[in-house]
Image 1 (spheres, rainbow, N blue to C red):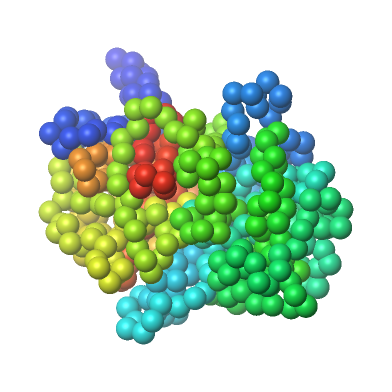
Image 2 (image 1 turned 30 degrees about the vertical axis):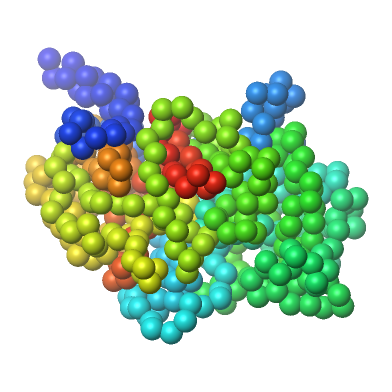
Amino acid sequence: MFMMLQLFLLFLTTTITITVTTSQNTSYPHFQNLNVKQTIEETKLKPTQIPKQPLQTESEEKTEKRKLKLLHIDKITTFITSNDHRTRFNARLNRDSKRVAALLRRLNISVSVAGEANYKSNAFGSDVVSGMEQGSGEYFVRIGIGSPPRNQYVVIDSGSDIVWIQCEPCTQCYHQSDPVFNPSDSSSFAGVSCGSSICNRVDNAGCHEGRCRYEVSYGDGSYTKGTVALETLTIGRTMIRNVAIGCGHRNQGMFIGAAGLMGLGGGSMSFVAQLGGQTGGAFSYCLVSRGTSSFGSLEFGREGVPIGAAWVPLLHNPRASSFYYVGLLGLGVGGVKVPISEDVFRLNELGDGGVVMDTGTAVTRLPTLAYNAFRDDFIAQTTNLPRASGVSIFDTCYDLFGFVSVRVPTVSFYFSGGPVLTLPAKNFLIPVDDVGTFCFAFAPSNSGLSIIGNIQQEGIEISVDGANGFVGFGPNIC
């Protein structure tokens, strides 16, 4: 009988998907089961060296235009720095803290050495920050650069705009897994003049010998500097001509093998904005869940926007046009809304506060007041689980060594307009080592900004319709 019960619990765990309701009066599960044994097994690396040929066949390209396979960094053999899960995870959290500090700098929020944040009163700064901060970009795609196309890994980043790669001649370049792109080998490469409209849209643009120059600076002292050019990018077998990119001749930082970055933010220089009418300002992505053998996806165009998604309005912050803000009204634990004032999550008229969806941040950050109430409710409903000491930025951890499956309360986001997103258990209770220590994957922030990170987004199809001002969740999973 006990064995049958265990098998039933395992079945429940493997068949749970995301739950999105469009009314707070609609019922959804209050508890679910986390498959501890399977999740620990998934911490063991099963990386794949992705072939350097185009990712799609001609038959696939007919039905899936502008679609790319999306990979977590741990799946790419050449990017792996350690086989030990704890070491990799600690490095990820270290990169993550620097990523968050960099995002706060963009909003002109001061950050101390310990990561504490306080608002400044002076004007909004001009630093451009990306998911490559200390290599913190976690998700990669492989695209073709130039004519003929040279395949390169690039990080996707929904929190920045510019598309850039390292270029020859390389006065100063970090190590990347593929040969550095040489513009002289591409028949489609064309420099951009200083007086062009494109150059006028580039932050921190300069001019040298008639050519438009760019500079992207990072909070840790890393940077990329070079010239702006028009180039052809190849996605699958679809060629996108005359994309404005940064061609970096001087680059410094810990970028973990990637050739550069694809900015998917809301600004005018982002890849999405440059595609314009070709895609209707829409794209969808699905960040593959950790430890699985499948790939995620990144697809551009309205044909990739699913029917049946739960839609939430995007909010605009003139201080940070690159960021995708969503209206969050509250948080739920075990099917009950936590008593937190909605003002905690509100984006005010000065551009302070608010909630950002970010692919480059791993762990969701919440204002301390909201986090404490949220965490306390979760602890109150998990008194049956043995506690463990805190790990890094996590103060709520559990010792699940020897467990096959555990019952945990659901965790939900309540969005403006009515949708409630209830997460899979593996998106909020995560292993930090391979011996059974699991932590509540949220962290407090002394700033007013909330960030929904990629751990909470994993496995959920997310669509961004920038033209109409909405972001969608589901209905599909990956």
